[in-house]
Image (cartoon, rainbow, N blue to C red):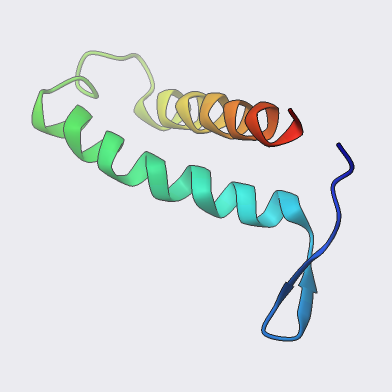
Length: 67
């Protein structure tokens, strides 16, 4: 599949930008769950852990859209 620009209110946006926003919106509730259950206290570097989860979400979204 070819990734084409998306028209958002008259502005053409790269599709990866929308995918990045989508991954971030999915990450927000996952981060709250991780804080609630104390997962972020058990990892070595919480910011690096969150970044890794974000990158996994983003790559999964890109792979799903590319099919």
